[in-house]
Amino acid sequence: MLDVILLAAMPISELRGAIPLALYKGYSPIEAFVFSVVGNLLPVPFLLLFLHRIRSLALRWGITSRTFLWFEERTLGKRDIIDRYGYLGLVLFVAIPLPVTGAWTAALLATLLDLKIGKSFAFIAAGVVIAGLFVTFAATGINIFVKY
Image (cartoon, rainbow, N blue to C red; front, top):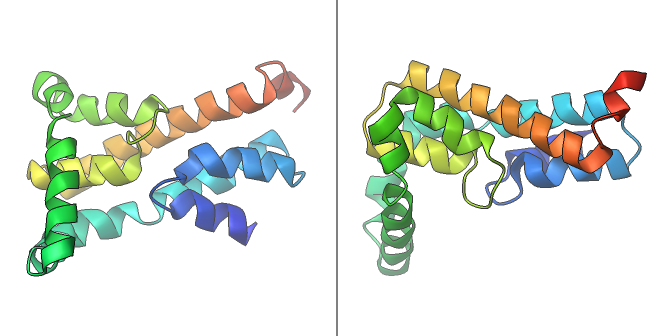
C-alpha cells in the first residue's frame, strides 16, 4: 500500500501510474482508487504553500534555474484554461489524465497565477478524483464497479 501511495505522490507518475500498480498488486479497484487519490493529493497543500519559496531558491543556481524556467514556461502555456474558466479550469486541467496535466503541474500553475491556496486545493482535488475515476475505469473496465 505504501508503494502505491508514494508512486501516486510522485510528480511524473501520479495516480496514472499508481492505479495500475495497485491493481497489478491485487488491490480491489476501490482500494486502488482511494490509495492513489490520497497519495496524489498528499503533496498538493505543501506545493501550494511552498512553491514560491522553492522557485526563488531554484532560480539562484544555473541548471536548476534553467530547468525551472523551462518548466514554468511550459506550465504557463496552459494558463488559457484558467483564464477562460477560472478555478473550474483547474478541475478540467487535472481531470483529463494526460501527461503533464496532473496535480503537481496544476499546483505550479495555481502558484504562478497567484490563485488562492484553499480554493486551488479544492478544485485540484476534484480534478484528481475525476482523473482517478477515468484511470480506474480504463484500467479495469467500467463493469468492474458493478461487482463491488
